[in-house]
Image (tube, rainbow, N blue to C red; front, side, top):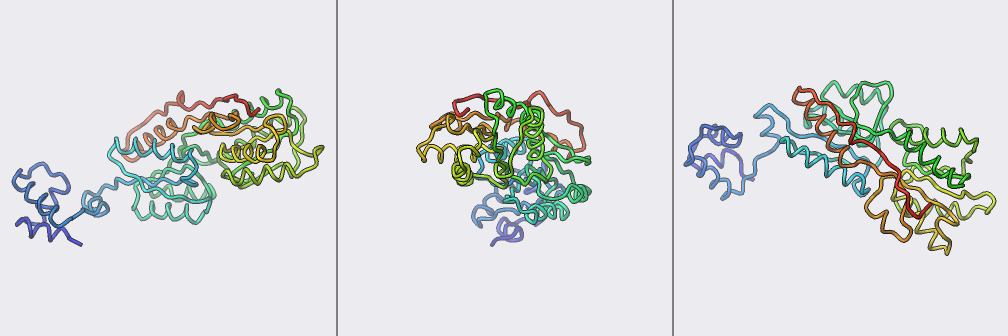
Length: 332
């Protein structure tokens, strides 16, 4: 693998001149630029991003933590973050946690080691104090997440309010036995807990109870949704929910698929409500009632805030763009 010394030797120039070229120094003649570029091409030399950062004494990489990229919500969110980061001259290091705290800590260690300049966390697995401790090494921004009793900045929506509204909507439609699906475990903070609070508050106000067998934890994808549906449909009819509120469109789609495969009907036999408004939700066999998330706005605002923190300037978050809304379709 060619080095900067090899490029300098082939171009017939000093290492310092090549280094200035790589760092876009303005005072280099066109002739020298051409010689350096030709030498780089012939040697197939690619400058190290980390080495460039060390030379310039400025890290331009932002770490992004997501649960899993296969979830369309995270795919679109990362797309928005990356496009905005590029506009400001930053690049991303993306890490999937698969809900594993150890993976999350690895990215936070990168922040400590200055491999990344800051971290945008779109999912949370660690305790708030752990994250707070790492914030001393560089800026951390929570995106679509929120932690109580911490000063870590966040870009979030009112998950509790919309979940309360959605649950009330189901109740007003006549569904009084409502199952609940969450990607969390009902105890960790963040948007999952906020959704649970809204769901429980609506049930409580209507004096409706929920059975433990109607709560499904750590469910994330369509296969999980199909398993949930099979469990629900295996219950005696008099002990079976008449609706499901899922914190994920993927899970909700899996539930609908399984109900239909068993020769039953949605919403007649089981109503289903999702969360995210993923593109596929309007074109499936039974279009899904869901909650629309401002995914692009979440990514843009989180990145703008991160860049402002890195560059020592102020930024006022555009909260008007961070509004959730209920989208009614045929599944309810």
